[in-house]
Length: 325
Image (cartoon, rainbow, N blue to C red; front, side, top):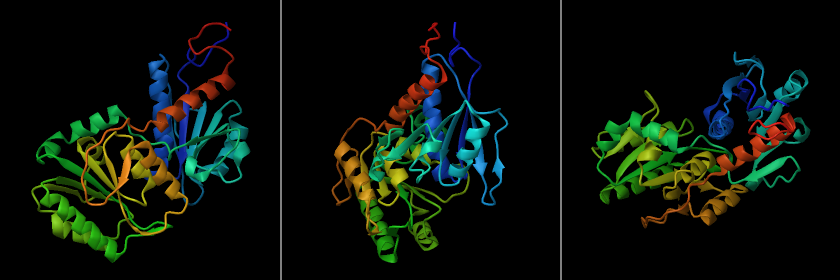
């Protein structure tokens, strides 16, 4: 009998990034989806974090050498080439476009808006994320008292900031404040969170306008982050249009998603916006509040399924259920 991964001691997955949450969560979300699907098949996998620091040093996990390596972000790319020589039997996956280093990976999970077409690339709407029913339930349970204290209906408002293509200018800040006040006037409670990219001037204005409002929960960055609780507790989700990760995460909830405009040009990300609108998850915010339903975007789960199949096909020529070849 040839032993399969399902029969072996739990394999190990390294999640490799520069440690920034927006980057790491893409690789971690894919790893967690792999873990969940393997659990459903009666197998297990352990996940460890490897972080590439700015000075080039690498903090490796202490869980042992990897059987599966999932990287995201530029810092992970040169490390993959070195690790392929060290871990010869490891399966290497990469989230995003590795920019000419295509041969270093067994599978590339590429956003469809990048239009990457290669034999080892899988195209997907957006990028992998951590959103799952279990994570949303966990988030809501952790902050149930705060959510229940806000009268329904509720809207989550996810505010980003400047990017390569967009700017959160004072004019956009005026627009956002006015739109939030409009929602409150319609008796919509608000759960507002800003990112590290949000200009301080807008943060200060949000605090001044809404921190003491009894129908607003404004997360100021102190304490445990209620991000997943906001997604779970919302009837609608509003996201500034430059934040591709948050737009895709919001679309994975099955809740109506509205994109809030920024100044700038979407460029290739217009293709992502169009894909999310075509899927039925997202609409531009034009002032009219509507309710609609759609199947939660499950691209992470689809990518995890493809990854498992290719990994197992390379790791052992037997069936996943442990039967002999």
